[in-house]
Length: 295
Length: 280
Image 1 (spheres, rainbow over the protein chains, first blue to last red):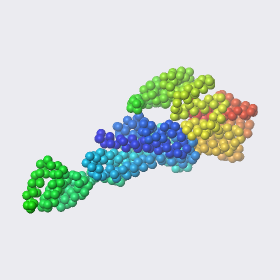
Image 2: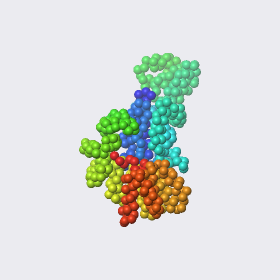
Image 3: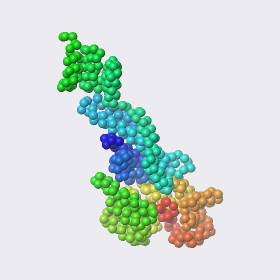
């Protein structure tokens, strides 16, 4: 990841960890165990949940973790069921964050609709939401691995009647080592990539990306000598962003190539309205003007 | 402020890991390492571990002196709780009570260390069942303290003939984890109901987790509870050869059964993990 990508990724990861740990504490409190609340963990303040090493790793890997939420199973009315629910609360909260991010991305994807001033900030917000959705999906999936200290180690024993919900300390230590080996050897990379791919597959593409794709398609058609198709691609690009002088200029070029002079004239005039000083636009305007019937 | 705390916490981590590693391998080097980790990171929980290491390798007196000094330097409930438990170990009940009062003045005790001290003081003062009853109603205690409270009340029920309540508490303990004292209680209850095979099964499970002295002690309580006096005496005789302190406790229970009841069962018993974490 580049520094810029890391900086865009961090807010989502931070929010994901905070919401995850808070969800464990909140659900435990709702189910009768107030020990996590006593430790101040029923809070959306990230500072209450960050661990020093987990935070450092956020900048280096970039991935991190929070302080564990201590739960007292003896406070639950139904220890097995309630421990299952409070353990599931973290990953479920991350999945809700994914859904929230995807919902908000439906607004931020239309960055052109917010006006030229807000275009870039909205696009940045879209990227932050996109990376937040990915971070939260990874947090949810990774935590389901049945290995202490991950939530999966608490969830799976609750599902099997013969197993006790509490893990033995020796097993906990051993699984830390296994977990570090797994991380170091990147054994889980394919699984993580599959999660990222699945989430990316359901994400709405931002208008900026679609616009850029359509411009690229138009350029390819022009290069291939298919001006009519290029014009269609530019029509589609302008439907997304009707404030692009560059796009009007390109369509004027394509229309001129097809000898659609009035249309080309309209386009180059609109391009010049937006960018009067461009020498290229002025030159094309002069060429098109020669082919127009005298008024 | 957070940034400063975070940097301090981060800088203390390598020293903390080394200290914990040294402690794991039973090395006295853990004392200065954990002490340094506390001084750098400022985490009172790490300071408590340093005091525990001091207690283990240098003895109670030195650990108590250090706890007092640290409490002056960094007034934190953890240090008050640790100093109180060490005073209690030394048999200085009034001093332990003073540390408890000091700790309560210092404010928040999110890990419930002062609750442990209060419970331990009650245990020494003979009021552990009353405090256990108060604590049972609370929902904000750490898991190890809740387990000790349940264990105390379970044995109290057993010794006072409230067998149904004892069974409910034992089942509650076993719902969460394998817990030898609860297996002993279940064994005694099974034996009382004439289910010898069931009793054997429970005792066998308990035996996996306990030292021979603990088995004798808990078997003594179990037999006493179900009125198997001869077997209780037999367990007590065995216990005298295994652990003098536990035998004295058992004799105390026996005396209290013969004289008017003073409610003194034993939650501070270091049987299994329940009593494992509350010392300094």
